[in-house]
Image (cartoon, rainbow, N blue to C red; front, side, top):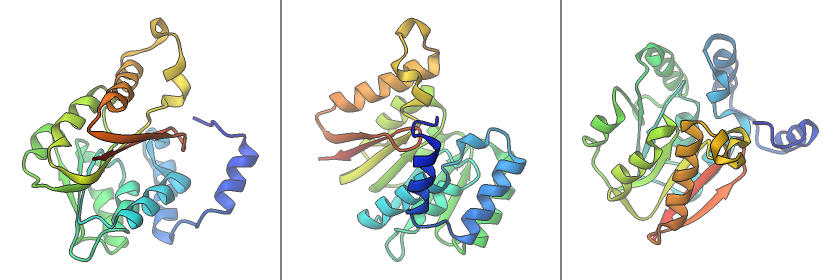
Length: 213
């Protein structure tokens, strides 16, 4: 997942706004105590998500895949007053940790955590959505896109993480696993969808950003 030379990556992070104390603590805690800490958005991508959210000024954000809550805290910084971020994760073992850091970030009234199956939970969250952030099971990215699309308002955004998948997306197809194939198909699907404008940003592990026309 290290697409930039280490020295360049450090330079980029040096001249990117630093993490808040809560995000620094959550970053350390995740890396020290949670399995697969590479799933964390981290400093650079977190600040990209925060900046995008502040530019868009959303009223409603839906995040599919909370992990330990880092990206939710970043995205929530751009919400309009009275706005809400719904974040969904299937792993109930992380619920206490997520809620702890949401509380430390003073976002208890802003971030609504849903534990369970995203397909079922999405049907209970009313639109319109201004931002949807997809960072969950890769095989279902295309399904999530279809499930949320009609609820995304005109000019709203669907952002998907990990679309470069550590560079595996450019392997020969016969060397790809199911997750990689699903991510390639997702990028093809979005790129071919004339209902959106899209850009794939090579930030961290790749962000596919689609804006609904």
